[in-house]
Image (cartoon, rainbow, N blue to C red):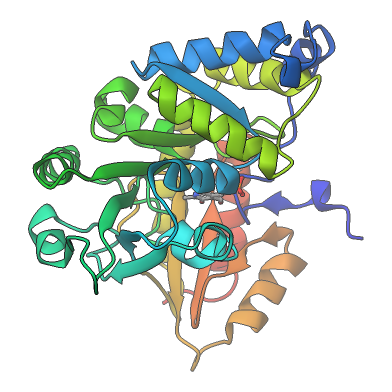
Length: 347
Ligand SMILES: Cc1ncc(COP(=O)(O)O)c(C=O)c1O
């Protein structure tokens, strides 16, 4: 097993290790049995996030995948339809969870860099009949991972919510990186959350906690999600050690995401100078996706060369690589990673 601490690790913002201060918060956490509703740190976290997003209730869950599953499953019955974007995380990277475990049908639309407009969605909304499934949920993602950390325009999110209300259907927001959108646009987390009925948010990405996500919604939806979480084996006992890390992240790691965004833009400026590489998307937050000209080098060869120079990135579909900035990557690291890129040859 390679020791990845020696590398500038740009594979994902999930690779961060808890800071010393976060480890202290973990060590000092007050805990209890959360399945009995006894863990004060989990309760504090759930109340805090519900307040922050101005929703009635919240549920701490082990992962973003479970948060998305519980959000969608709590709003639907087996056989219902969910409209979502073709490149979304739910569609591509969650082992078909809502389809496999809850039996909903997914109707994937092609977005523009991850964004489906309300006008585009409307013709696909189905009313349940003897023949057709009823569309019950529209799922959107902000920021959008596969679209290179793209921010869903706030006014479009509002239009999607208005559309859903007109048709009596609900919106799930995969906000794994919602804080990145918030620090970049200044739109409050509550403002974003008002565009959705359920929101999942991750602490284990740019916020730098080791584990954990949260689902927020109305009390009755969260009650339903809590029971489904138990069914999945996601009821956690002294989970306060994890909730303490998440609380610490909310206190100390939101505003600093601006650094990650600045570093990602700097990384993008290096990409643009390398022969055989080009930016696939404009960089809006902390994700850089580059197109690789395979006449110059293959993705594998490129990643191998970067690795030899101490930089880790990941393949991201045919002819693409992804680099993500985060808490464990400094401005100096980005300069060094940029030098490793430039050493591949300037364009
Ligand atoms: C947009 C988005 N949603 C959900 C998830 C799932 O999170 P987890 O890996 O905690 O299940 C991820 C993970 O990278 C993600 O990027």
